[in-house]
View 1 (tube, rainbow, N blue to C red):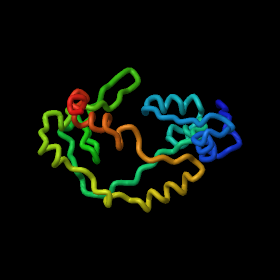
View 2: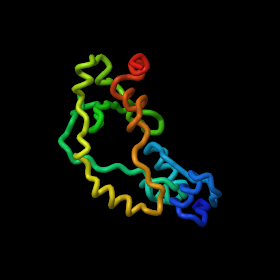
View 3: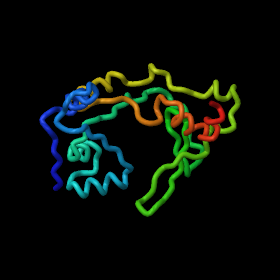
View 4: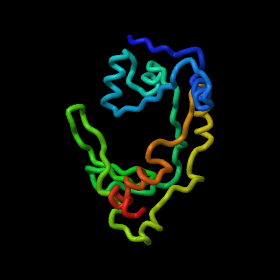
Length: 173
């Protein structure tokens, strides 16, 4: 098994020192991979392929968390070959490759939308999330540098491009 130097600080201490431009015991580590790569990294490390096992083996300092959505469904998939993101309505299709494949954005439901359609696009109610459950997750990962969100959440380009199409959002700017 590959040995990673985990240092003398907790992940949270390490990241806070780094953000404060203070000396840390090592550079903070972040990691994210698609499922195919995740399995191969886990096999190389000799650990189970779940995110926590791989992240712990790699010495990852960050833990991304989101509150669970508990509201009514906002979207349905447009067909059997498609998935739809339950909070944004972004549509994906499976693209096979030599490593298995991945879900790629397609169909862009707001590509031809006018102002009225965009104004009426469903968005989740902030009250429809389980913040108590999120608090419990934060406590469970208190030794990590916990963050909320990911690329595509609370940004202009990624999330909007996933439902409107990149060429449209550039024109909309």
